[in-house]
Length: 399
Ligand SMILES: *Cc1c(COP(=O)(O)O)cnc(C)c1O
Image (cartoon, rainbow, N blue to C red; front, side, top):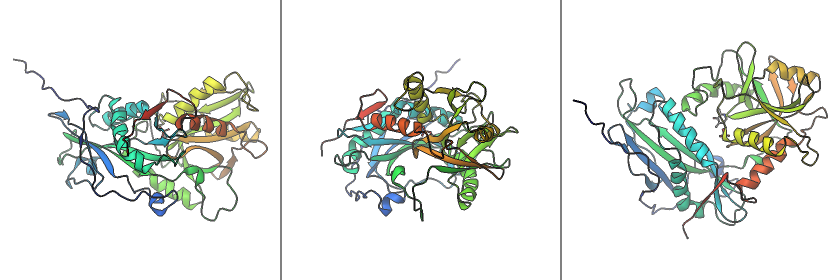
């Protein structure tokens, strides 16, 4: 006799149990110690329990607070954890917007499954985030603070208490929102003049971030802990980020938790190209910002001049540090930058690899201006200066 599979519930972002905070927190000012702490969250959080037996329970909105989990919890021992990083933007028209939230939903769903956690219908995530912002948005991103944002961290953990090595039978999806310093307004200690860009330290063969068949392409906590030591060492040497290299041929994959781009004249054809590592071999995280940069360049810069900027071919292919070094020697590099939600679009000034310093600025020691143009196109969409289907407007509660 075959048994009927039990009905397990899908994640549903349209129904909530809501418990309001009765003890509202002070909203920190931009640049305040609370904001700089990267740990001071808004008044509420979203929380959704999952069990293997019943599936996803009704999402809750509740006061922000600590979690209580068993010391034996799966995530604490077996790294059953994945997360997303997104932002909510206070537009110049006073509206709140998310940027391509379905891309984050899709990625969280694939990350969850890669870390043995339950998947979900990806477009439900934006509804959960929107609910949190409907409630906390009006106080935490006041209408008059146009051009500001909060960082949003959706997370899934295996929180069941089973110490046996097995697929989690219980999980928790939660979403918190954090005031976050604006990366464009951050100044480094002791810095007198504005820097021309990040200094990247090429990783050494004993620290490999991602490998074929691994999980570097998913946003799992397991990718980050082991990489922080190399990052710390690079910072102690005065660098901003690690540039993750892979393989005997030292392929350039990505930088820190950002995707890496270089603009140069092709060695054979002389054509101007924007080059970034490909997704197919699964060595990089498929950034939402990366995808948006490529789409904007293909859409707006492939044929026409934009101001002084000449047309560019956007190319996704394996590139090596040797090629970058050669291009620098031959004066073919125009500009380089990294992309990601947290630190947005940031120019790269130089790379150190094997004791060699390579400048990634243009021949005149300046960036050509592509990164600035792409950044401005993205900001226009995020902050609602242009209607665009990448922006998702959050309806807020009346105060
Ligand atoms: C999050 C992340 C990125 C950037 O992705 P976005 O979706 O653009 O924020 C790039 N690389 C790594 C390793 C990351 O964790």
